[in-house]
Image (tube, rainbow, N blue to C red; front, side, top):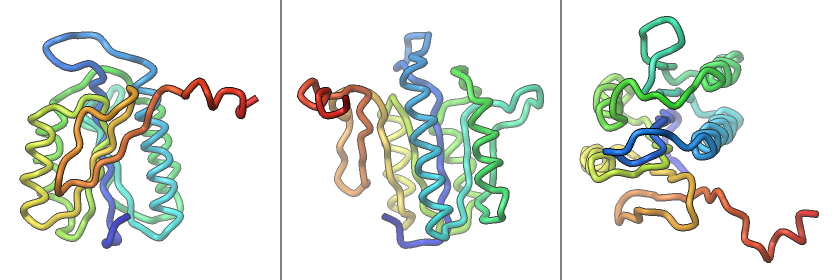
Length: 170
């Protein structure tokens, strides 16, 4: 839930905690699907919605960045941007959030989607929250969230289905 009409969705493409290299394609796909669902919900409910990803657009050398908007093509632009997302980050998500939050309208809500809620990321969200912004953290992957924080709305999207629910899916 949000109390503003602008929403900035930040997608962190890192899926394995540093100092390890590599990625989890399943977690990245889950993060992308989560970003699509949140963007669809926000735009459908009248929010100006933007997308920021900590990697470069293919062949441009520019970060993936769509300012909050609600034009008829905004969802298509978000989908196209997410279709090109891969697992190589251009900069840490915390740095992206700090730099882009300066350019967002003051009343914007910020949603971070990540598989790896590092101390640096959580600390960055707390600092932004203390300035009066609405901040949410969505962790994707795993059975349990790695972080639950007082003062930050925290959500978890599991990448597993409990065995007892498998029968009901058939």
